[in-house]
Image (cartoon, rainbow, N blue to C red; front, side, top):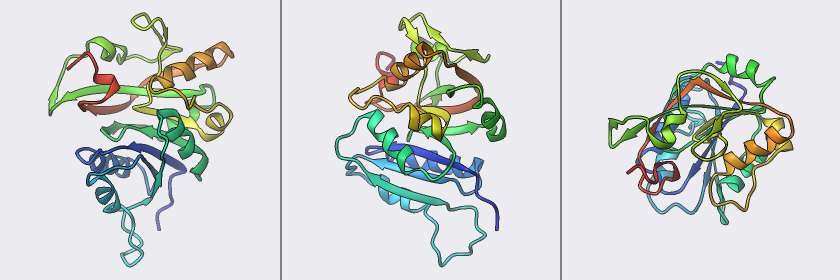
Length: 226
């Protein structure tokens, strides 16, 4: 039987039926039986039915790599930070990958990220915006996602330190010690990294951690771009 990778993938979900299956499949493609926690906020579409298709059935061959350990956790009073913090508390592994339900993981080097996480409190990755199947130019917020590594990325556009939880990697111990603010309705990642930099810690933008970020009508990253 293949050894499980020591990673928990946290996916926040609210009616993400269009893309969540793609997100989960991409995680399974890159990891060996990862633990996946879907933090769901009262979805009314087919997204949870889709999630269940990836849960391992004990009656199936135990050697199959097409399924994995997935837990669906409901959250009532949703904010981005509270959903992530709940997932971190429930995680059973030492490393955390936050993945948006409408992102498809394209590149990741787990061993490299584990090594870098010794020096960085958090690592976030590259995003390629996909508009209804079409790749679009990296303008506005997407211009932050360049092809070179950068410590403590500072956004002139936002006039603050930049970090993005569409795809981000952490040691679990760091998120337990430094949880995200739970009262914020958005940009929890920017406030979090700003506080860490003030404390003298470092974050890293690593373009070798890469996703396709698909368009959603209510996605904060897409506002002002559509």
